[in-house]
Length: 160
Image (cartoon, rainbow, N blue to C red; front, side):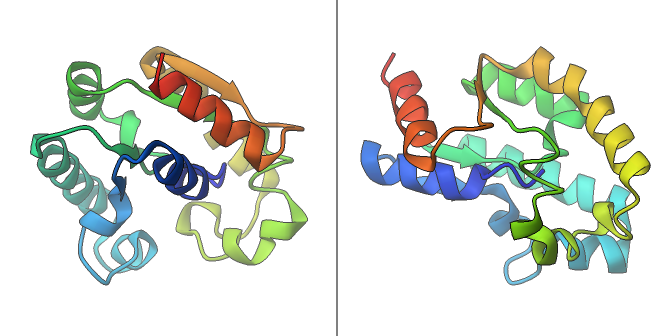
């Protein structure tokens, strides 16, 4: 969550010439994940997310796809990703992502970060690490790196 998947993915797509897809944009057009979670609940959002993932992965050709941080939590999604994708985990510490003062206003808009309770957010982050480790074909630690370095690593992996 908030590690730069969309920004870095969009930049890597521009450099590589591949199309970029942000899965969040394919769930319900014009409605943010936060709005869906607040109005329909997290489980309804996860169902819509899985449906969108399935549709995006059925499209022909390669692309760079930015997933939501919770997308790999469902086994069904992990199976789809294992079958159809090479997965790059952008591994950012909480200090450089969620608790980065530069991102405070963005974090405040995320339902899962609502209230900013550090212990709860750390527990959520820790619970996701094994899932990300399981699904990742490649891991890029983003802490202390420039955006250009991160994008270059993504492009290098794409062409390896």
